[in-house]
Length: 385
Image (tube, rainbow, N blue to C red; front, side, top):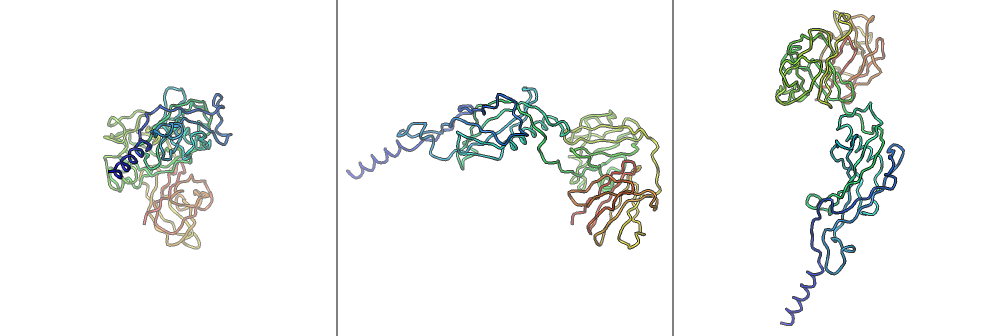
């Protein structure tokens, strides 16, 4: 009996001293902004910002006061930021990479804050060319117990400060989108010959003489290869011939050119919109042929002819058995030719040709070749092995 009583007393003591886990509510602990946050913080010309926070109460032992024993496990602190231009419409929260286990000094590199603010402003519709920008910035800290992030995360109160930032995100990678429609045809094989030319900033264009009636939809590469219409990009109303409009990719309808003339069609993937720009010159120069010409013969005498798939847009699929240098040329003659200081790769598959420009360098392999003889835009897309 004596042994059992001692064991019971020990167990009771352990239970009194063991911490009891509880999850605090969001906003139940404070975050404090840096003192300089009363001014507009120039994120381009500073190195870091240090925030402080109260310690969230995850429970405590009866033996120790809360301020000394808030739950025994390590607490991680992770900063998040949201951006706004008018202090009314806010972006989503963007987490930084740097975390901390000391709530009294949460130091974040300003490069990470600038990236979060830039992401937020782009989400709200700002373009890279519009930066640098001044914005309102909200900050909060997310605390969680190590190993229990999903079940113990809790957010602090928010703090607000103005900031100024340049555009700090890496360039958007160019993707491959294809025209499918009245020109060149309503199937995957035809669409593969009509690549939209990447312009940067998630904008893609195609210049030709459009028919003006149910001209096109847009396929991403994977949907073009499988002829998947469910994800095709288009407009809301079938045959809409407005000069600009919204793009959707669910139950999308065919977009029509405003008139049957030469236009540049621009697809803005980021803003999910499109525009038609009518060419001033409605009688561009005509060529009987466009071809590849290069070092696969010592005297550069063997042309690889391309096919005109839509007016002034040329295409060919070709295999090089060795590394080559080449150009595009018109009418099998050097009087009109296009080159570029360009080494083709899967990451650099587009360029703007220069009349009489440098030789283009290309490794051995199979490629899809595209050129528009009005805009001089060129694409060489490697075929995946």
